[in-house]
Length: 143
Length: 147
Image (cartoon, rainbow over all chains, first blue to last red; front, side, top):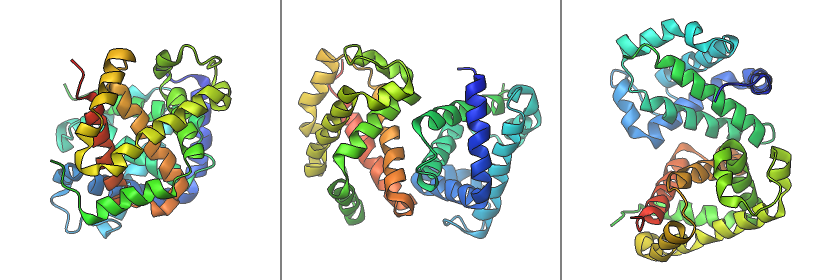
């Protein structure tokens, strides 16, 4: 499921639109994930406040979304481009990769909510493929 | 036995009561066929599915999307016993249609995304959680009679 030139163009085009609402996307995705998939809270037990839109959630939402933008810049070689991030997730955070899919699903729902006209099936396909490749690159150093 | 809170029950009933089946059904099924092209294997006699534009304007796909969505009405009306309500439908999908049950989740995800687009910010995290719980039970019940 390699990204075609068309996929990459669709992803870059849509990311440009996303930039106007980055904080909202990040916060909403993370808040949602913690509510809809409560088991994901286990990774954030050290936060004071896990409620939707809380301080830690907002801050971290931005970190997540910036990670996605960084990946989009490195879309031509995700595996090598995301090596450091992969090491972080594999050795320090030790997030079970099954959660990457959960996060991706929440992000797709948020994108659909915030961009109902622009998040067409074709854009959905390209973004889903891209995020799946990102998840794969993030899993690279796990074992 | 599934336990439903009052919030979950009223949320599901409200979503389906307000839904435009003629809009959401076709949108969800066509999205599924575009985003997960291998699901097209079940629609060999639906005519032109060669590209996204063709899929999205295909009348048979649209009609079938509406049919599938109305199929969920039974679950909404029998939320306390979806498993029994869907026993026959499960046999149909397994014995006659030979649909890989993993595909139910794919269509479910597309339906969630279409409803999110229609409801906008009204599709809160709590509403999403309730809707996904409902879908998970529908999907599980549909897969129950496979052997």
